[in-house]
Length: 286
Image 1 (cartoon, helix red, strand yellow):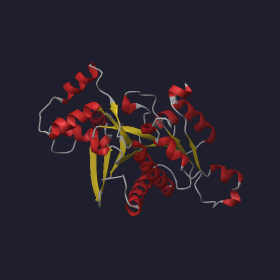
Image 2 (cartoon, rainbow, N blue to C red):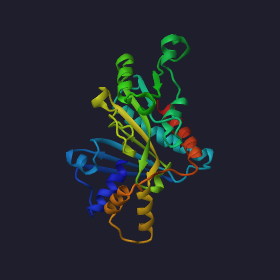
Image 3 (cartoon, rainbow, N blue to C red):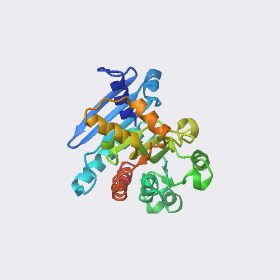
Image 4 (cartoon, rainbow, N blue to C red):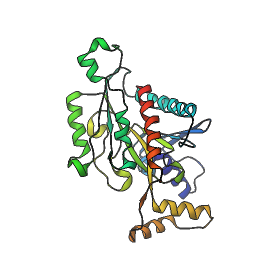
């Protein structure tokens, strides 16, 4: 996540001022914090190893057993941020393709597929029953392309074919992320206008979905659902005020095959909660 890379870079380099090429704005709304990171030049790209563009992170305090009122507040915040970033790139009535990335049958990786199941799809109605829908309704279509291991096809190859045929003006791609912060697992949403790399968070990088590969803007939506074991060890040692060389620890764990990918035991209910927030927020914003 861009906000994590910014924090890590500033900490590692003992910077009090902002990184050159990075603009950051923090907005607190009750228990929710919205951090907007903008990478403006090549130096900023190099520092965070991210493309130039906008990265918005919405951090929430708690998802389990939240009240209906609190959930609606989160949905409203998310939909406002998504609307703002979509409106930077296309007109309000232009067509959007939504892509649910990940594996429906692996719970931590199922967010994208489950969100698509709850999206209000309108493209077929506008084509075949135009009198049954308001003419100003945006045309929305969606696809869950699956994963390379089950389809044998790179996701970008599938989406390229769809984009070339139905010609949407923008793609929204939804995926699970890997975090470097225990407190962000299933409590954050990242929105970016630079695209997304399927499998990138767990070392299984595939070709990116971006304007460079698809020819149209790509908004990436991600929720961190997993983290690596090294992060847990580092956070635990830091909380005990034990000084460590984080890079050495990670290298040693990887060398000994101890760097497992971990997810919370209540992941099923957490995914259901985040699916509700993300899908409803998308429906409202579009």
